[in-house]
Length: 124
Image (cartoon, rainbow, N blue to C red; front, side, top):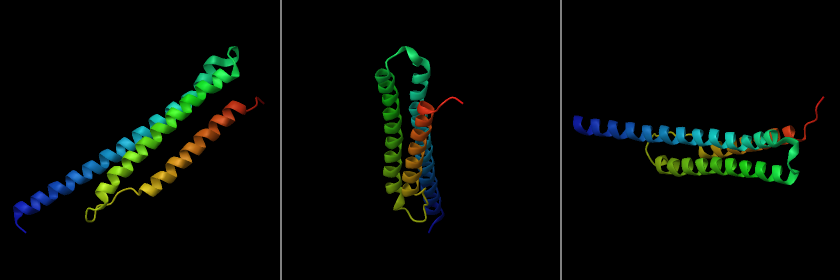
């Protein structure tokens, strides 16, 4: 291999690495955003308080949760799409999409558990 080919291959490898890092950063940014929006449902309940009908407060909180989870899933799908494209490259390691699916599901379940505890928790 010539020196020019070696340089070309190194640049390609760096470009693949940057693409992977960008996809990972985007996934985690969307994950954070989704959790924040889903948690915003609790804020709605706190702000509206006692003066509004329960069905309205529940509906608004539910919308925040659904939108937040949808953003989380969209970020995960985008990461998996990019990861599959990069997976064919020699010796290029990506974060396992299966691991991220598991972590996303755990975060969503935990977020719901925290919101349920907040909504139905009792004052002691």
